[in-house]
Length: 442
Image 1 (tube, rainbow, N blue to C red):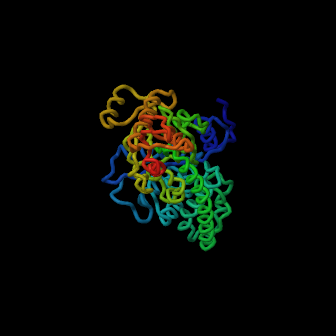
Image 2 (tube, rainbow, N blue to C red):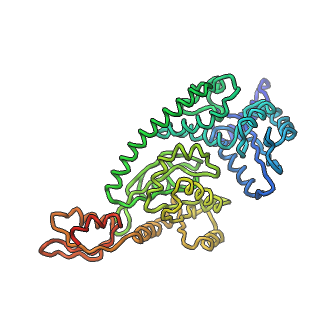
């Protein structure tokens, strides 16, 4: 390691060292101190894991977490959430370490945020702001950018009171957590103008939604079953999509590597076809603003014939991941869709954990999307799950309606096929919505 020059401050040396350790690139990163709060009804291990996850989110956002504190409280303090005495105690440490931002794992209200910033004398944000910041960095499509900007505005609107300056003035270089995002650095603090911008964004998203609906109807008109992959962030959804369809989607070992939805054709055993889509990753306490903003994107899940719920089997708390995803599915009205639970990253767990997961979820599949282990069995299972939704039909289809015969082959199961003078007699099992297409020939 190169010796630091005497003129370098302690904070600069620490920042450079932490930057090299975390990112291996010579960029200046904010130093962050993390705070979680545990109440009497909370499980300490759950709170510890949540704080660990907050550290990963912080690193994903581009800041370096240098330390963390799990504070015990009977109830939130109305003024500072953790109590003014505890806040001043922690502020002594954060100031000594030249911390740039304090991040709370719990949601803090605007008044608490302002009071805490006075005590810590630096930026103070919560988990919701951190996740919004990550989404702002990763949104690349027009729809995604609009969705994230809408969520950011809805989050910041109640926090603008009494600031006396625009967010663009606060943002500085635009590298601080919760100060970036599509168009965010140009916002005025005038509440009316922000409400007007929110209204325009909602209008634009409606227009984008109409285009998405047109695309969705076009896919539905193909009569192929719709399958959606859902899961906790970094559970391997993109890797599985690539493995099953050669989609070529970005797949990285990091939180929220992809935000957009991708749809690809999936070839199932027996020659059947389906459409497979992935979605944005979910997370514990996913901000409600984001769920609302991404609702049109998530609509595909509510219309899926089968939801493949992917879980990271190597995570210390896979059951917590399952619960978090189920919570979001309930919020968007997709929890009653047919669902297949799939544990991914099976190559990273030992035999005892495999046995434990099988005991807890005997109907679940275990795969490694990276190596391909278990993927063939998963395809068979998907085909079987979709076949369970098929209904029997017998029809004599005229020879000039070969399109219907082709349809039965692509999306259904052919039991028998005989060529008669008047046409092709088929006995098949097909998706219920398509039975009417054969009604004239039954």
